[in-house]
Length: 184
Image (cartoon, rainbow, N blue to C red):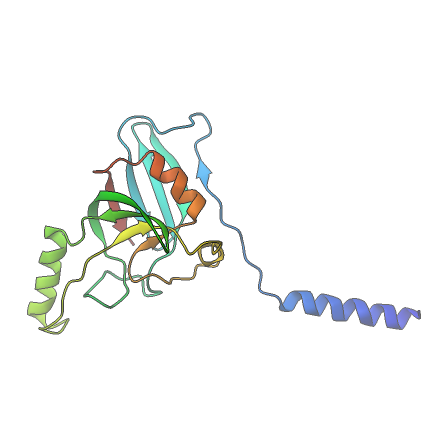
């Protein structure tokens, strides 16, 4: 084959590879000197960084990649807006789920959430007939669908979603009553 043909084929191959969307696989980051958290555990979900961070009595323990309901990272305003609520919540139940692997249900709406919601209604920021909504959870993805977490696809109705294997690990050391802080 002539040198010109080889160079042309190489250029075409390189251009074709560049056209593919590259996906960065996001992984768990962990403290390396303990297998399990120590003492009381709590969670901070950072919406702007797409991370769920676990803390224990010794400080930071682990960070897991997550996604949310809406690309708009602002606070949940009302039912149906697909936004993830901000505030301090706690895990009130843990159960398997037929679509999303497992669910760690949060106590949304809290008194703090209701107060913000009512203030927004009074200001006219949301319609008078709006409802606050509920059913917010930390849950997994569809089976074999971890790509939605790796490529930052916000797909839930306001929940926090993570990879199923990550949820399996996380769920083992999060008791009911665990504090969950969601912020931006």
